[in-house]
Length: 224
Image (tube, rainbow, N blue to C red; front, side, top):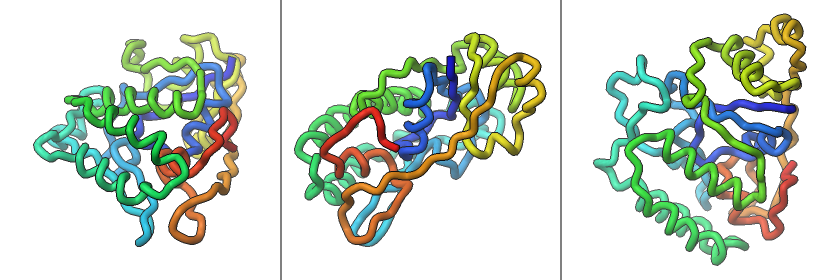
């Protein structure tokens, strides 16, 4: 069984979904510390003036000691309306706007207190749009206490995985010898970003998933 792990993310880029597609089980890592200025609560969309960030505001008090699962959204700001407005004005001429935007209007009506709950429900939405059926579980449901490489290994052992699909930066911290001892292979992702029809001039890679789903008429399980 191939297993992959990623932190919660808002509007993830396509490489995030590539790992999920290539795996039998995806573990959403929401039991680790929240990282400020990361892709956990923000991502980019393309506009006629270039990429802009869509950011979910969070309450940062105590974030250095709290885990992702407990990170609260700052709902004093009407960020949902702002994000929908940005998506509307920048993708209203996109190929799939008429099909996708009404679904997003419904999705963004949901209210969340916790960032991880928002990211989980939005992830399920995008997995459905991309026809990805990989089983997904949350690390916060596993009661595991290890950190870094040991945590990845413990999760693999917990589910009986024989292959761990890691991002390329896993080479910097994974203890490969311990994985070998456990009989678990490590495969490092080497992602080639696809070029697809895109509004506003030259193609820009690494946008949030909404850019791909708005512009592409033939969605399939294979996006590499």
